[in-house]
Image (cartoon, rainbow, N blue to C red; front, side):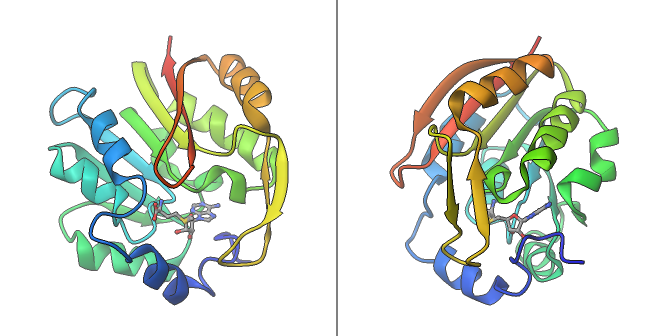
Length: 193
Ligand SMILES: C[S@@+](CC[C@H](N)C(=O)[O-])C[C@H]1O[C@@H](n2cnc3c(N)ncnc32)[C@H](O)[C@@H]1O
């Protein structure tokens, strides 16, 4: 069964679209966030794709980056781009990486691809895998909505800001900020208390 929610079958298309431009959408926002973390902090990039531009922004800022992605083709591309960074081909909801502890976790373009119950599970797993004071940054629309993913055509669902905030609180995380990037991607920034 495909745990990549259609991305394995569309990996070449996604990689081509995501590679457009010198600095991909979201990179500058993520770079700013990276600068708020401790030097060499350990960061898990959940749904890392090929690692460009998000993992790259984190690595360029001196952070210790681990990746997970459910698509074998994406993981292969990540390994080619970042041979020195560990990456696992696993679904976020099943990943053994969540048995470890990280200083920060990022999930860029992942959360809303997952079924609602899986989003709830993954938020709890990410919370469990953070050190106290650890940071979580993920993207999802601020509105509760459903749409078909532009790359795969598969249904995506955002739970909306109110429900994400409630889920974060129930998992031991506090929402400390929300913002949008140049591509109108909405970010949720939370800390483990
Ligand atoms: C929209 S892409 C974003 C990729 C990358 N974060 C970026 O910024 O380019 C979503 C990624 O999530 C991965 N993905 C989808 N479902 C997943 C799951 N259940 N567990 C882990 N990765 C998943 C896909 O394979 C794809 O690489």
